[in-house]
Structures are given as structure tokens and as C-alpha cells.
Image (cartoon, rainbow, N blue to C red; front, side, top):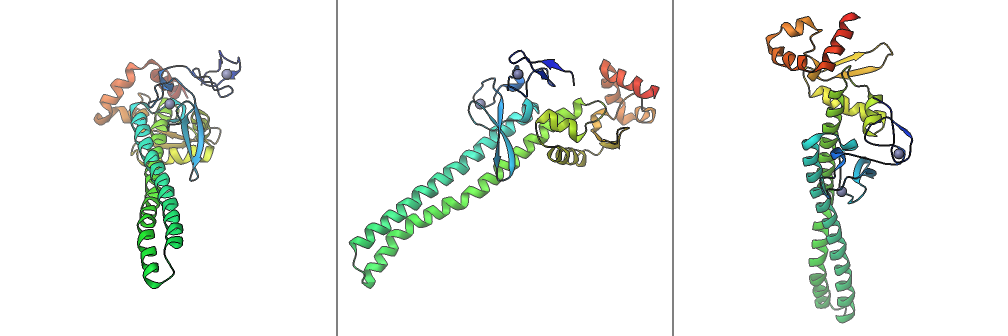
Length: 253
Ligand SMILES: [Zn+2]
Ligand SMILES: [Zn+2]
């Protein structure tokens, strides 16, 4: 990570295109998939999960603008689910209020005879059931939204982890994404679990480094390059100068 100076507030930043101090952002990476504004994100906690939302439109966004098209697609899907949850909640309140109103009117209008009670029950039941039905739809919609948010965070973490040539630590990822270290670690563990070629090493500073298989084909690892399955990946790695440099450094050790 290279330090840069924020053009807006002059503070030293860890990212070249965003500032953690004043929220300045620049570039397509920060373009909101919902409102198309180049805008920073804010965080909100929904059912114990941290969700990054657009500071302009409030739609869910990927942390630090990472994760590419996959994360953008997840962001759109998550917004659909969040909206469904909100609609269901509003509907449940509206039907609930209607049920109360109908019950009150029916109580005044009909005498307390048995037939009157039946009428009371009949007219009150419909809005009550509708309120209940809407209420029951809130939690599943929100759960779907949060599952999608998690997929979006994984996509963002994947991009950040893949960019770390020596492998990513939970500490580095937490800074990059703006999440807590335990959250970053959980993301790295999940990415590694889904990636058969991932390596988890402890480095010289006793930090746990998660290396996704994207870096498995480094030319330094003779055995792996000899493996024909890795040949294509090795060729691609040769194209990237910085990957070569990293390999030389590793070979020199
Ligand atoms: Zn700034
Ligand atoms: Zn937006």
C-alpha cells in the first residue's frame, strides 16, 4: 500500500483514490451501481451485520468499491431484497393500523350480542391476517438481503486478497475494506475454504497470510510450474512484471 496525500483535506491516506479521514473518493471504482454518483459509502448495521451504503442514495455498496461487476450485481440484488423487506414492513404496519381502526369502529357500531361479536371478528380478522402475512415476509427478505451483502463482501475481499502478492493478512484486509479484523479474518477464511489452491502461512512477523490460488503459479515455485495444470497460469504470471519481481525476491530468500 502506498501512502498518498488526500487532495481534499491534505491528510496522508493509505489508499490512492480515497481518504478515510474526510471521505474523499475519486474514480469509477466508487461509482454507485444504483444512483451512478461517484460517491463515498457509509456504514449501517442491519441485524448485527455491517452494511456499506451509498452516501448519496442509501443503496447497498461494496466496501472500498472493490469486487468489480460481481459485487455490483450483488449490490443491485441486495437492494431489491432490502426494498422488499421495507415494503413488507410498511404493509404490515398499514394493515395493522387498519385492523385496529376496523376493530374500534365495529366495537362502537355493534352491540355486544353474540351475533355482533361474530361480525366484529369477521371484519377485524381480514386486515389482521394481512398484517401478519406482511410481517412474516420481512425477516426472510432481510435474510436474503444480508446473504447477498455477504456475497458482495466476499467478492470485494477476493479482489483485495488477490492483489496482495505475498498473501493478505486480516489486519491488511480490515484496513482495505474498512471492516473489523475479525470480520476480515472471517472473509479470508471463507475465501480460502472455497479455494482448493489457497495457502495459509504464518509469516516472519507471526501474521497469518492467506494466499489465494491466483498466486499459486509463481515461477519461484519450481514444482508448481512443472505441473502442466499450472502452465497457463505461469505464462500469465510471466506477463506481469510485478509478479516476476516478487518471485525473484522470494527466490533470493
Ligand atoms: Zn481527505
Ligand atoms: Zn448511490
